[in-house]
Figure 1 (cartoon, rainbow, N blue to C red):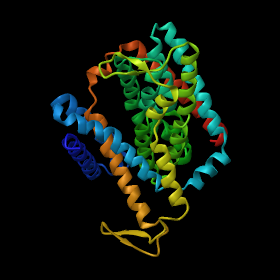
Figure 2 (cartoon, helix red, strand yellow):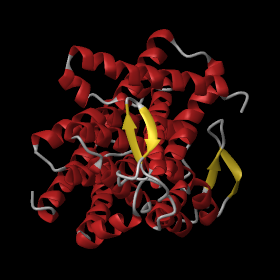
Figure 3 (cartoon, rainbow, N blue to C red):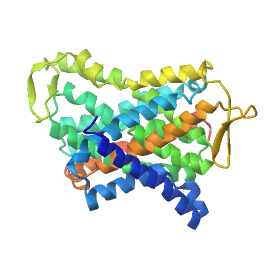
Figure 4 (tube, rainbow, N blue to C red):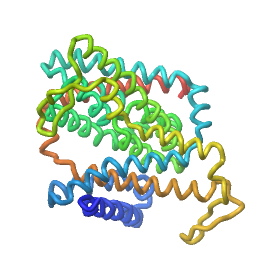
Length: 376
C-alpha cells in the first residue's frame, strides 16, 4: 500500500477540486451548477493533468488503485443504499429488460464480427468491442482476453476503444435523455443497458439525477447495470467452450504480452476475472432490504448531519450514499489521471468506427425497448 498512497492522494485531491468547482460554477450560473456533475469534472480534470502537466511514474500504482479498487469499494457501499426488493419489483414488472440485455449482447457481437470482418479488424478486437459494448466494458475485456489468447497489446487496444466511447456517452446520454424527455427510471434503464463501463453508467446517471432533482435514475441504473454485468458468466463460459472445442486451451497473458506455456481451465480463468464485487453489492443491498441499517434517521441543518425521528431515510444509509458518490468521483479522477490521449488513438480509425457503430446499435435497441416496456 506504500507504493499506492501518493497516487490515491492525488486522485482524492482531484475529486475534491471537482466537487469544489461545482460550487464555483453554480455561483456564476445556477443552472449549470444544478446540472454539471462532479464526476465528469473529475475525469476531465484528470485527463488534463495527465496530458498537459503529466503524472510522474511514482503515482501510477495509486492512480490505478483508485480507478479500479476505489470504484469497487464505491459500488459495494452503494449496495447498502439500495433495496433489493425494489430491484425485484422492477424486473418482475418489466421482465423485458432482461430480454433486452440478452438481445443487445447478441446484436453487439453480430455487428462487431460482421462489420469488423468487412473493415479487416482482427478477431480479438472484434470480440473486445462486441463484449465491451454489450456487457461491461473493461471488465469484459479483462475476462475474455485470456480465454481467446489475446496479447497485452490487443487487450490495451480494446480497453482504449471502449474508454474512448465512454468519454462521449457520459456527456451525450444525459443530453439525449433530456431531449427524449425520459423519466428518471427510464433513463436509468437506458444507461444500465446501453453504456459500456460501470463507472460511466454511474457518471451519466448521476448527471441525469441532478437534472431531475432526485436519485431515481442513479439507483435504477446501478441495479440494471450490475444485473447486466452478470451476463459475463454466460458469455465467458461460451467462449471457453468454443476455445475447448477448437482444442485451444485458454492461456494466461503475461505482462510482457507473450503467452504462457501452461494453460488454465475455463473455470479458473472465469473465477479470476469475474467481478465478484457484484456478490458483495447484493449482500449489502440485502442487509439494507432486511432493515439492518434502520437505526435512526437523517437530516441536515446548516451543513451539519444529525439524527432525526422525522425523516424516513436512515442516517447510515444517507452517509453510505454520500460516501459512495464521493468514492466514485475519486475513481473517475483516477480513470482520467491514467488516460493517455495518444494511446487512445493508436488503434486507428477503423476499430473506433466499429465501436461507434456497435454502441449506436445497442443504444437504438435500448431506446426501442424503453419505448415499448415503459410506454414513453
